[in-house]
Image (spheres, one colour):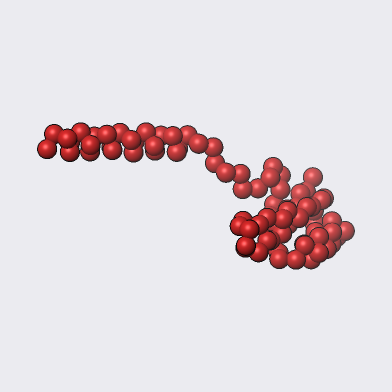
Length: 85
């Protein structure tokens, strides 16, 4: 019985310390500083043409299309980030 109480206390302390470490970690960055995510596309040419159209019409100052592929066998996507300065 004594061993089980000790194990429960060790587990409780481990969970408490894990919560402290997890809450102290920096959050993941969602948007680049000053940037706004306008859309996610499967075609890079469309992403760039839409971004360029926004610059030409004055909707934003500049843009870039960021390509991300999360796994080697998964499809990649283009994230349109826009910036207004």
